[in-house]
Image (cartoon, rainbow, N blue to C red):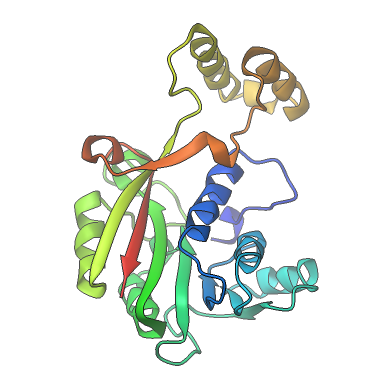
Length: 250
C-alpha cells in the first residue's frame, strides 16, 4: 500500500484526480468543522482541508513513515495535526467529527466493514463520510483484482449494498476524466498523442518533453490537473468510471 501513496512534490499521472477528490470534499465543509482524513498519505490533502476550517483537522495513517513525513512537511499549521491511526480503531469518541474523508482506502483492507462502522461511530449525527474506491469492472475487468496492494475491489452494486448497511443516506458518483469531453479536432489529436505517450517505452520520454508536446497541441501539460476531472451521477456513465466517489451521511 505504501508505494501507492501520492507524492505532491513529484509529477504524477494520478495527482490531478487525487487532488480533485479533495476539492470535492471542500464543498461539503463548514468553517468550524472537525475533520478526519484517514489514510492521509503525504498529508497534502489534509492541509487543503485545514485551509477551509478553523476546527481541528486530523490526518491519520497507519504508516509511521507517512506520519513522520507529514509532521515535518506541515508543521506550521495550528489546526492541523497528524497521528498514526488504524481506520478500524479510530481513537476518538463517538460523534467527534463533522466530516471524515477516506480516499482509495477500503480496497486495501479485509476489515473494510469495521472501518466503515468506525467512520459512522465517530461522526456526529448528520455528519458526512466521503469515500473513493476503484471500480473493479474497469480496473480488473476479468474479475480478478490486478493491483497487488488491493485485497478487494467492488462493483457499483456491491459498494452500494455495503454503504447502505452502514449509513442512512448514500450517493455514489463516478469520477471521470473530462479533458477531451468537448468534440474538436484539437482534442481528438491531443487524446491520440496522449495515449501514445503513455505507451510502454515511449512513456519513459522526459516529462518536460512530453509537456512541451502536449502544450503545443492542447495548451496543457501531459499529466492531468484537478480541473480535468468531474463526477457524474448518470448511471450508464458512472458504471464505466475508473473510480467511485461516495458521499455518505450518518
